[in-house]
Image (cartoon, rainbow, N blue to C red; front, side, top):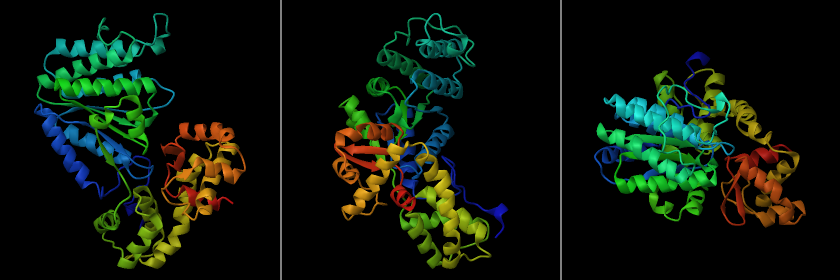
Length: 400
């Protein structure tokens, strides 16, 4: 089949041609946007799930929905080695520009506050590159969001930006990807500021996306975070949604799958959106004609697996040291020894991993902690760990 017309799009955060299975989240968010813009109380939103389930795609879709409503929006990706100040300031700068507030002096004041917030950590003798203010030509506003206490500063900053939105009857959405990578102080400040903004009724919400343990990260910071955010677990697609993700783009190109081929695709992908796109692309490129058959899926599967092995699994595996790779492999082996499927989403006990390696759990703490920091595993409960990547156990066992 013509590869130029291939409709499938495997890529990190790349929107698939058919965003199947997320209609409920999109409809619910439309309600949130309307309620917040009208001054109604509403919680900020947190999306959680494994890698490859489409959290970033959905986060971008929600942001697009906010833009269509005339909201000011900004997005950032948290990193464990970076303070929240600069990326958040950049996101809010964009949000203020999108709002289109008519009063220039009020906009300049808000931008001056944003600039002061961003530069607070730079210090008086910082190099020019550290005195961040790209695109903000107004003077720094002193005495607002620049105390050095991130919790105080964030409340003041979001209050000022939220006030601009209220003036024009719109809202502001701050979209944070990889939210679990925020530092402890930044997480605490973000929770506190969301709490304050919610109580004040200002039209500003935070929409975060992260790994399954993100709720535990937020709860450890502020106990009230369980009531502060609306948590939505983003999982693999149902069979119906997975079929739609394949069939709808194919139909646009005057192609189709036979029923048995769709069944084979679901068995191969497990319903994970990223895998659906990867297998869909490979099957399309290798199938001689439409309709696509189970034989076409069987022929294309090795090509899809090679692509995933390099771009999805391998890129993560290469980030691990030899000791960390041993730990990852032991996680898969521990699941097998306990009679579980190494490919399953479930967790294993750290003590079982240590038993496989013949070592004491305490001696493995450096490897485990490094893998946690690299986002290759997560801990949803004390003493247990799981892969952040679906099908990673199978990949590891295939490495020999």
